[in-house]
Image (cartoon, rainbow, N blue to C red; front, side):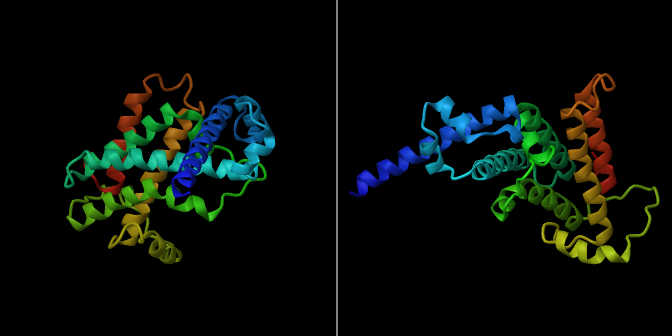
Length: 233
């Protein structure tokens, strides 16, 4: 009985993965808003009722695709960070930035699902949060490691003082940047959001016919963002 149950669980896991793979292909054709359990079932040669046993609704399937996407991006970022010596903070930052762009270029439709326009009628559940912050945790660790090592040298340009109202926000961000003062947290957020802003502009065509060597421009931009944080990249 135990052996039979294990076999059924294995078949269920394989079918669940196959449904998700077909749904990812559908993203490339119809986008997240056009994702349809019936269309997935049709491509797989299954009855719609059979697919609903694995994913009760389109939103359940979307949630799985989102979690898978965040986990894949998070793993790419973690691997990039781990491949650089721990005390090379600037090198870690650059490796992480390139990992984000490389993953986005290799998985454009999944990147669009995570960072593109919201899907009408869909609200991501809390289940997506642990996967969504995997890459952010890595970045926060780089900044806090550099701060702890005294390796941050803020740019010479005078920065406006951090508003007092940001103190509570900084306390929340400090959960992933332990020991980092508010002004460094602000600069860190500027750099991190700048990374995704740049990648999104490239992915969604805003740089078309303007930036002709996107790889070189990206690398330079991320070195500038590193300097914003105080890293010499």
